[in-house]
Image 1: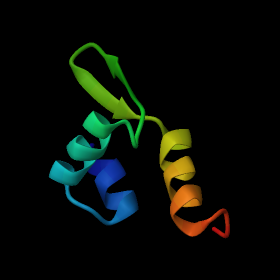
Image 2: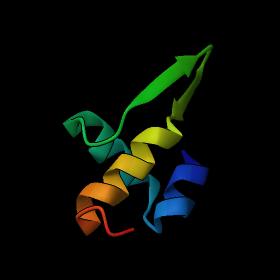
Image 3: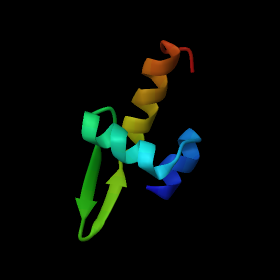
Image 4: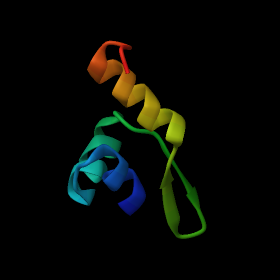
Length: 52
């Protein structure tokens, strides 16, 4: 979560909010929740209209 938050320039709380709303996709391995990089890229594409 920390790395995803850092990549997007937002806090962890906002990451959890976006996960709960379905704006970001994640997967769980053991006790770790990992945000998919493709989900981060798609979020950026949606926000910039594909001009990223």
